[in-house]
Image 1 (cartoon, each protein chain N blue to C red):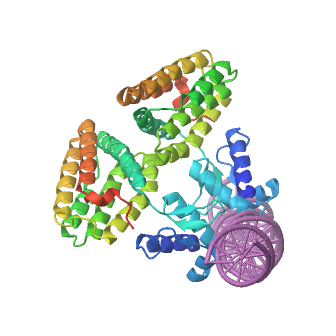
Image 2 (spheres, rainbow over the protein chains, first blue to last red):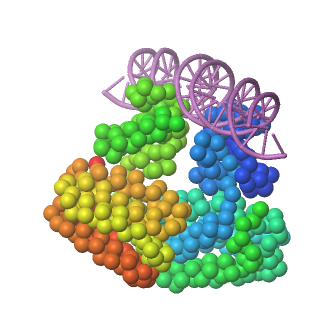
Image 3 (cartoon, helix red, strand yellow):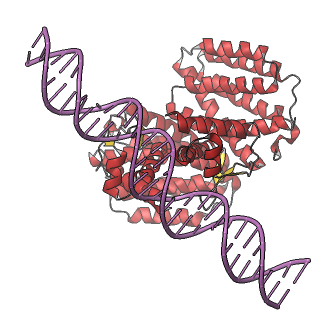
Length: 214
Length: 214
DNA sequence: GGATCTAAAACGGTATACCGTATGAGTCGC
DNA sequence: GCGACTCATACGGTATACCGTTTTAGATCC
């Protein structure tokens, strides 16, 4: 069943790249002809994107590209600060964390050249820990926030509100530390470190990051 | 747009009441003729129910009534234990919690006669706190778990695996305590008490509650 | 010039139809 | 009897068509 998924993937990419601006109307018919499919798959793709937080439905059923406010960012951040330390704790408690993908991710981050690439690998690293937690629902909840986070970050990048300098080294160092704690299988320490990591990440963001990006 | 929603409501009720058994196939065509609508609204209703965790899709796109295992219960419980204390903390920190609906809920619980009614009011009480947290995404995440929890509880009720005796008084007492702490606007205390409340609730469940209910 | 009314176009909700694939029962061969 | 094969059926994915409602733009009136 590729139609719905490919339509969703296409729209997701266009939204994250900023080709579709916040507040833009996503009319089913127009999207359908543009993507060369019928309205039904488009309709379902829009539902998917709504669940991901990239699209919102108006009172009369019309879909619009999501607009984000500083309050949205605070909400997302508060949830990361709760969910991810929990995931780190569970992953450490389960023990036998599969470290190879995590190490590969850190190595790739060390070779990354653009801020977009670093961000992508950063999110991937965190997703690996969510998966390692073994709680499928926890992962699902986190994934439902991930696209929104990507949306926020992509808009931030587009207006260059990011201290590129040092980000890569900072990320690699923090992730190395996280990985080493996960290996020690000390749940409490892993939880605490993840909390600090995310708090630190917030401070690392540009000062204007809590304002609405466009 | 009532068709999709009413179809979802109807199916949700049938699943929660146990009229549709775990593992039952929900064929779009069959459901459509049974509910007197076309396949399109049924299709979208099934997506909604999948998001709620009441329905799962097989590899070939067929929808089945969700089956729950003890691992599912543990996951749900672990997430409540993270999300709800957070909500209590946020609600207490915001202050000015609207206590009237909470008090009304406690009073209604005191008058409740059946275990189903107590459970419904219990979930409603917790939902009110989630709403009072002011974090819309936190509420959304919790709501996405709520139907699954209801599914679990309804199946538990149906096999009478529940100590009805004392449940009502226990619930009312615990909720009174929670409400009083929320009024003091002490975030840390509210968080801690909610964590204890949920842990206590787990112990209150019948011993066999962590086995698969049917 | 601005607000209001009106009519045409746009849009979403739903029904129906078609097609390819998966499923499951019946049959054939062992 | 038991397993593999086959074919009719069931089912899901998608396209198209229709209808009522909402938007929107143009015209009218104050």
